[in-house]
Length: 167
Image 1 (cartoon, rainbow, N blue to C red):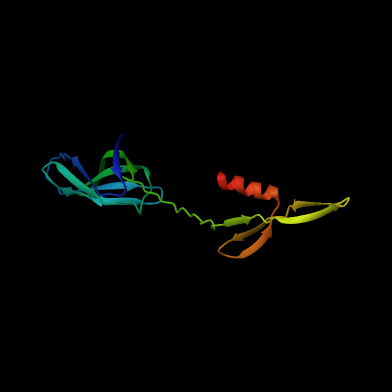
Image 2 (cartoon, helix red, strand yellow):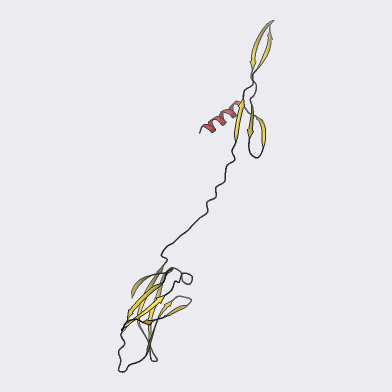
């Protein structure tokens, strides 16, 4: 049994050489049967040249799936049935196109600013007056499109923010 490759999503044209011999002339009809497990598709043949038949198979992408199917050339002469040729038809799509949606969410833009505020603090110790600068926690304002608020941060938190911004 021979094998033939056919396109599932395009029209296929097959030509077969057919010789009918007998003692008297008779009318003949030819057709091609494509057998599936659920159904059999039949396509009528047309006489093209003497001794040749031509069969046009339309696009079957909505009828069959990709794969191999048994195909039989059937000839009916008067009231007699003949199956002179059986082949395997390998149906494949000519082109496969797939697409997937890619969803990307926008990250909100966050801005951070910090200001260091210093204030002198006076310390009295044994009648000696020393001016020291007292550390005050920096005030950071975070601006987001959704909300705006003031947050007090520690030195470690500020370092983490700076390290994250420099990456």
